[in-house]
Image (cartoon, rainbow, N blue to C red):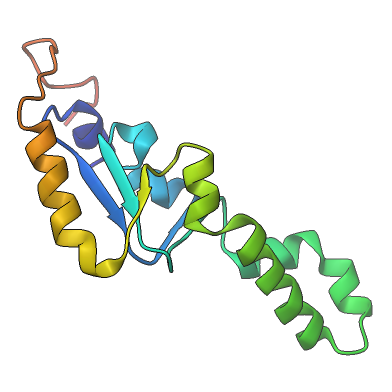
Length: 133
């Protein structure tokens, strides 16, 4: 599947509607996999890893030593989401082109496809890779 995304010459438009973490985000046709346009809803989470996994890894000792570990975990997870997982942070780093409202999704995709209708990529004539079948 990843090879197919990488080799595809058609317009590629991605809309992140919920969560996109790490390698899974790449596999869903992120900018680095050749997406031509990438948008995200304001409620989307885009990060290296999910808040719970990251917080458990980064603050394990602090959570274990806390009087109320569940409260500290919840606080740190919310802090992580606000600081690292927002689509606005992803847009600032170039991973996302636009943050759009859900109601505008159809118009955004249509506009992107209209813009990309003349897209041409020159690739080698053979579109098979080195992966043995």
